[in-house]
Length: 469
Image (cartoon, rainbow, N blue to C red; front, side, top):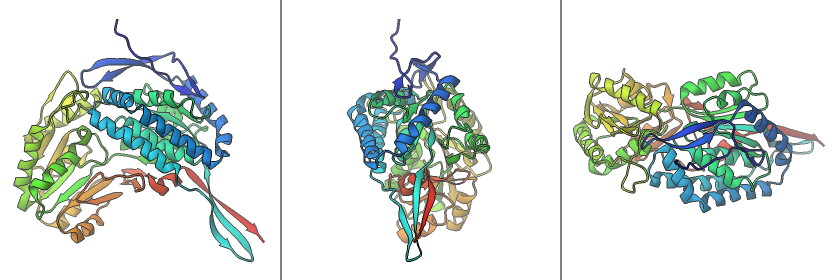
């Protein structure tokens, strides 16, 4: 009999044994990696109750205690990085190098938030009155985490929630719960009971959290479609929301770039994590003067890419994470010849959910391959002549998460970037994120921001304290 390791939800400081089990599939071979507890409605109610009971003491805890707790969690991740990397790779599919990025970024993000200041700000202090702006914790935060970056996204919600004085429920994706559950096991003794609870989800926990009167805020990262459902569910209780949703990021590549130097950067930023990144390049607008050369250079890189099991040190790109997403990408690939010409990739294979890095040239807007977010390794190469035309086409999207401009003229590049209708705009880079730089979406790419002081403020409510003299 195959031995499967056991995992436990964290509720009220206890690692509980779940009464229901669900399989977790390794996307590199479609085999059952292990069986994972599945939170029941009773577990959800118990966790919410525990978080509510723990909140007053955590809210009133000295800031030094909260800072120390976040640093302790960061230490635990660093001390157990190799084990966490392995679980991330096994459940998510990304190469170990990509998993190592998560285990290095997660503690860095926690440490960044640990040192932010929430001291009251003086608005007025004269002979009449003293007015201060305070930022108060909201209460219980539900952090709903997607499957593409399971550990780091849990931490960049956990950090601001805890330092602001909130308690937290983390709900990992049904297909990638293991690294997050393991984190819960590692930190169970580092935090007061009920302050952090982790609930593995078989697909029905999310709706139990959104709209629940015991939840004060939902921080959700995922698809725009699900984000709309979260928003509707939160309406009755007026839960605070941060929604980091889908993106269809455009890169505008001017014909003054060095094709040989820029092509590898564009390729890496389009296909990072096998294309499963909300802020990766998904539409490449390439000026006519270099269009053919750039297409050829990108196609050569795609054909040379090494796909395989993420545990293999030679693997550069892993599988699509789950069967549903794999089948979605397959359907789009079947449509590709109707709209453009595949110049690299185009095939899928198994066992595992493997999709070759695929490039489609001579394609235009008006079809799903360009207009919709493709969460997989399929990218469109679009030709343009005039810069104003490229900006208009890039902006003609319901999404507005990120965008980039590639040119040797930095002044022009910044001017173009400022005209992009996106929450983040880069010049000669893309997906350049850091804890001190806020990011969020315009249009249907989301509401609110993550990271930085602005992201921390999303986990607080303003209170004006005015004292007459």
